[in-house]
Image 1: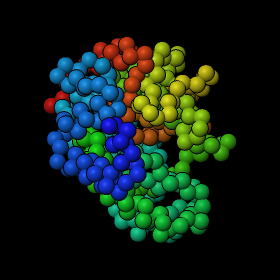
Image 2: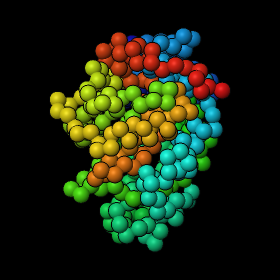
Image 3: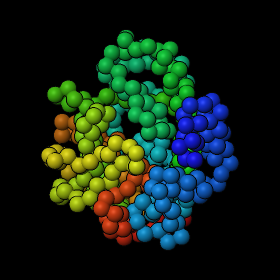
Image 4: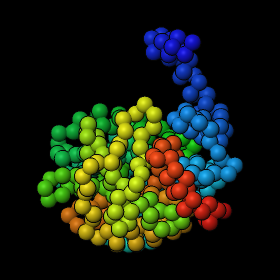
Length: 312
C-alpha cells in the first residue's frame, strides 16, 4: 500500500495536489504543537516527549512552544539583531551593512557597492547571493527570486515562533573574503544557559565533501556528531582537524554575553584573517529534529540545559 501511495504521489497530478493540499492545511490550520510533533515524528520516526523533555532535541522543541519573547523576534531578524549585538558587545563585530530595503526593485547597480557583497533576506535561513561584480548580475531574475522569498514565512512550516512577526526585508552586507580569496569558516557556538559549551565547524558546505566537526571550548573533539536526518546525506566529522580561531577564548566570551538571556541558543561567527565577525543567532538548531549520535549524548547534552531559567 505504501508503495502504491508513493507511486501515485510521484507520478500523478492527483497525488501532487493531494499532498499539496495536506501540507497547506497543516501549515494554516493545525495548532503549533501538532505541527511540531508531526515534523519530529516524520524526521525522527518516533514520538516527541514534550511533557517531560530529557534530550537536547526534545528541550529545543519544548522551547519552541514555551519560550516566546519579542527578544527572540529581534534576534532572529538578521537586520534587527544588529542593534542587539551593538548593545551587548559593541558594533566592531558587525559585518558592514551597505544597503537595506523592503522592496526588491530597489536592488539596482546604483544601490550596491563596487566591492564584493552578499545579498540576503533577513527572515530565513536560505543563505544569500554572492556578488563579486554588480555589473554582471541579472537584476530582473534577482528581484523576482527575492520577491518570492520575502513572501514566505518560515514560521508556518516549522512553528519556530521567532520568525512569525519579522518584517521581511533585504540586506546587503560586505562579502567576507580571506587574504587567500576564500569565504572564511564559520564557527557556531552552542550555548547552554548563557555559557558556551561546544562549537560546530562546517567544512566544505555546499560541496560533495561537506564535513561537520564538533569541538569543546578548549578545542578538543566532542565524542558525538549531530548528524543528518534519515534519508539525507550525513554531515559526518572529518578525519582531519581545523585550526581554532586565533581569538577562541574571546569568541566564547562574546557568545556568553549574547546568549545570556536564553536557555539554549547558537551564536555564529566568522573568522576572517584573525578578525571576528558576528554571523547570526539561531534558537532551534536544525529545528530540534537532527539526531545526535551516539544517542546517549542527546540525553547527556539535554541534562546540561536547564529549562525555565529564562522563560516568562
